[in-house]
Image 1: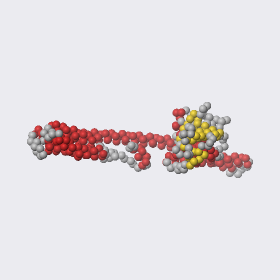
Image 2: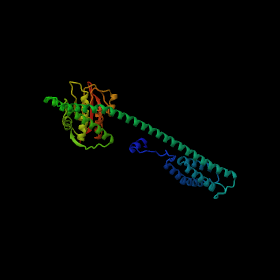
Image 3: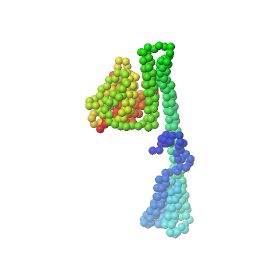
Length: 383
């Protein structure tokens, strides 16, 4: 189906104009015009043969009504040109075959000539009315599409402005935080009038490393989100045991995590680096909302019994959770459920969903029994 907003999105900055904006659009589709000409060239001769075979050569008024009906049908189907052609053709056929003297264009009776002239005028008027109606409908449809295109453009501009504002706000705060930590720790180490103890030096170096790691994660999320939105994500699907993916996603993880994998270990069809990144992002989100004294959980197994051929990796937290009305908005870029845990751009779940979708999978939230939120990563099982 024709969608101007989609064409504009494909065309980028090119000025896209639909047919009809410059007044060159035809009122009726070319297919209907061809059908009208076909009915005129085939239907009128067949109608003439049928009337002659029925023995109706001298019933002028009745014959004219039959031809007029045919002309109206042709005009409705094909518009002005086929209708006018049918009117002229009907006039000639009625005059030649059904108006004395037969087989000549001469008309004996004046009233017969009046009938023929009125027939042509009615045929032309009907054709013009049909054409005007078709043009009005085409103009109304064009206006509707133009309005829809403008509304879609305005909606995209609003969304772009919202994302830009959110990006500037997030970058101004969340990129500044690790940079400030790196700057403060490195400046402290370079102070010549301070004699740092080895433990203090180690602490400052750890702060630098942690800030650099956090900065790298933020930049990676931004780059991953841009590739996802541009459709430039490269995916290499292979069969991977789920426990291996979980182990690699937890590499360098310092907080406690409970991991439960079913036996036998399910094998998932996925891109290992992408799945590791998605799982790490979901787990990091769970860590942010897990209260002290609790640990997020990772539970992996085959989903829905042996017939479904799917694998679920469930990341469980026991935090405050979120109402179902907010579940979908959690996956929008630059969205945060809570401001108590700074240090992220709000891209983690958006990136995770994009990465999992690229592997023919889904992420869906569920309420954790007893409180909290569970993120279910559903992927195809390797056959």
